[in-house]
Structure formats: structure tokens, C-alpha cells
Image 1 (cartoon, rainbow, N blue to C red):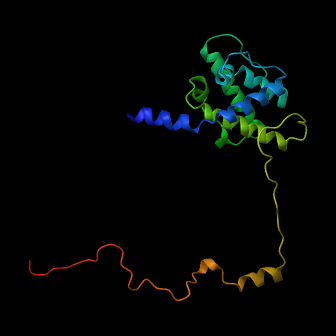
Image 2 (image 1 turned 30 degrees about the horizontal axis):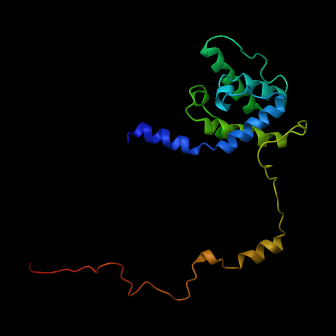
Image 3 (image 1 turned 120 degrees about the vertical axis):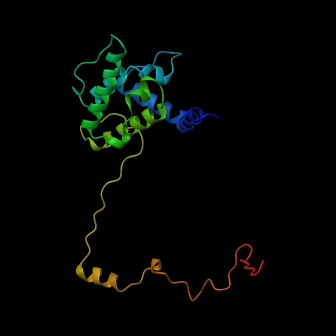
Length: 184
């Protein structure tokens, strides 16, 4: 198998159709419209217009101009505008996808993961009352310890300090022993 086919197979194995379905249902709920019957999820979102509409529902005015016609560069501009808008919304850089991942359908799994990151980010925006996608992110659990508690913790030897109850490796052989033959 060629390297390119191996890479494609690995990327395809990361795609989760259940997550694709959840993302599609979330988009449909936000927009209040169903995807055209018979069209695939990745085909509908491919030109970026649907994605721009989603971020405009979450944060009105995020993408002021959505290109609905024109060449492929205009459609790819929609995807770039969407990515810039969700980054400004609070989605981390690591969760973003590359434009070609969607436009050329190279890694739809990453696109879906990005939508899940956007869905998680909606929990952090109190103005959004609509549907959410994915689990709620955890909140900070800051702990304050007194000086007495910190000093008490310094006297305890943790298990990672290396207690092995006197066991050694003396006498252990794994496999055949080393034989040195002199004179041959």
C-alpha cells in the first residue's frame, strides 16, 4: 500500500459518522432548516455558507458578507471567514481545521471536531440560550491551602519516591545469558 493511501485510510478511520450526524442535527436546529434530502453532510457545508450562517446565529454580525455565488475562491473565503469568526468567538487554534480539509474533503473528521469545539464554546457565552453540542467544559476548581496544610504535606513521602520494599534486580535473567568464550 502506498504512503498516500495509508495516510488517507488513517484520516478516514478518524471520522465518526455518529458525530457527523450530531453536528448536522445541531446545525439544523440552530438554523431552523433541514439539509436538502439526499445530500451528504459534508456536501452541504462544503462551501462555507451554512457554517457562516451558524456563527452569525451564535454571534450576530460575525461574518458580515457571505458569498453565495462566485468561483471556488469566493467559497473558500467563506470558510476562512468562518474560521476567523469562531476563533474570535473563543475556539482554540488547535481545534480549527484547514480550509482544504473541508473544501477538498480531505479531513471531514477534523471539521466535525471543530464544530464540536464551537458547540462546547457556546456554553461559555451566557447570551446563547439555544442548543449546545458536546459536553459542557469544566470550570476552574481553585483550591487555597493554609500554610499549616502546605507544611504538613512536605513531611509525607509520596509513593512515587521509590519504595520497593527491599526488592532488587539481582539474579534476574531475561532470555539467554551472555557467554564469553575466550580462545576461539
